[in-house]
Image (cartoon, rainbow, N blue to C red; front, side):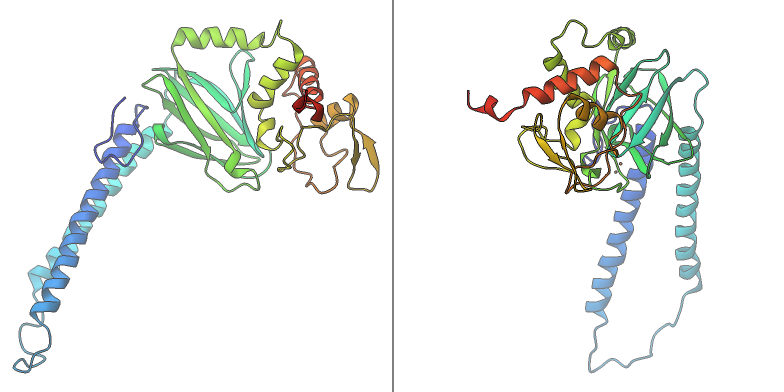
Amino acid sequence: MDTTATGILPPRSSTLAGEVDALFNFVLIASIIFFLIVVVGMIIFVIRYRRREDRLVGTGPSHNRWLEILWALIPLVLVFIVFLWGFRVYMKMNIVPGNALEIKVTAQKWFWSFDYPGGATSLNDLVVPVDRPVKLVMSSTDVIHSFFVPNFRMKMDVLPNRYTVTWFQATHTGNYDLFCTEYCGTGHSEMIGKVKVVSQREYEEWLETSASEGEGMPLTDFGAQLYQSKACITCHSVDGRPQVGPSFKGRFGTQVQLQDGETTLADENYMRESILNPQAKIAAGYQPVMPTYQGLLKDREIDALIEYIKSLQEENDNP
Ligand code: CUA
């Protein structure tokens, strides 16, 4: 992995990261140079021309035409360099190569979902092949989110009712952080994913195995895995702590107090309904913020999650 010249930015892992950093470093270094010129000059002048008995105010030259032209011209040239350079990089970031692999990105409170060519899907973990341009077609189902991968120097807002498009080409395999950088509500800071850059072969294998994920696995174990991979973990704890949503621990089989004053038994059907139609029965003390998982979970995955929740009973802690 490359390290950056200034050492303050994360390692570069996409084809455009180097160009973004070069411009960033140019602006940074130019700013430091002019900061020093101005501040050091100011200090020298303050000391040298401080008020003294023997010096009268108003003597000496009032202006210098060439000096004034020069200090207007230098910033003008610098601004032009930054503009033209920035525009060139901006255009590269916005023109998607024709052979790019296209992945649909959906943001919602508070997780990312990805749809791959051929029907594979994933939540929070974007899996892509290395050294291949990847086009992201992004939209949100609720509020504005923003897709940010620091190692790729790439950030794009994700909006409701409109598609935004961006692309990248990863240059190194590895796992990279994916952040939401638009404040989108209570779970914003938990809206964290990974970009997993793998070889072309591993990518193809992943596409195949993700279709048969969880087959032959006990439902409870599969559910524990889904609890993380399907982002339930963002809002539901398994240790009894209430978060954005109620904890899964000790929930199953209890009488749940609902917001409308009713109570309901937390059985399999209640769990299933809460996953597919979360607004139907809101538990008292919680906001109706959970998105529906309709279309995001297969029946066996719902079964597995319910089995997992069932396994999280209080007595499991004191065997
Ligand atoms: Cu999504 Cu912040």
